[in-house]
Image 1 (tube, rainbow, N blue to C red):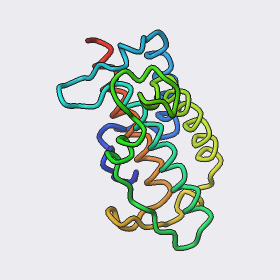
Image 2: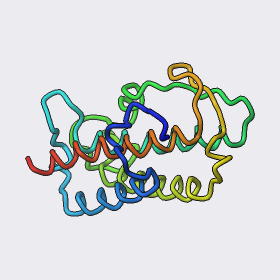
Image 3: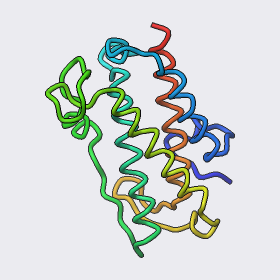
Image 4: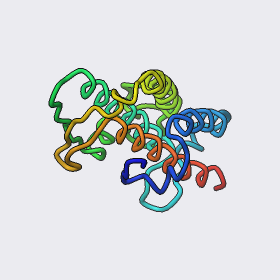
Length: 173
């Protein structure tokens, strides 16, 4: 039975590794021709823009990929929680986002997308190489309690699909 994560409904019956690969490919395809202005659109008032969603997805690939690696290499690993809004505040900058990382406008959508695709490929390669025993490696999280690397893989796959749907919605606006 597949682990139950906050994004289980988003993943559905899909195999997590296939979903991770498909989501990355779909993001590249969907966003290929977007202008900086298109990346500043949102799917609903008060919600993140497409650029912010991409930054968030790249940050998540970085953080959760690191969690998996730490769990696999560190006995009795306890994951560090992070505040996604605080992370966003440090990297998203103001409106526009046309610049490169480190400018006054924050991380551009293209930089975030490149980072996301690269980190996703690296995480996918690691996850695909894991044995069933590796995927069963336990760790704990202060909010979620006892988890496994397999739970984390399922979480990441569903999370990507969740945000891809938001980007699909933005594309229609």
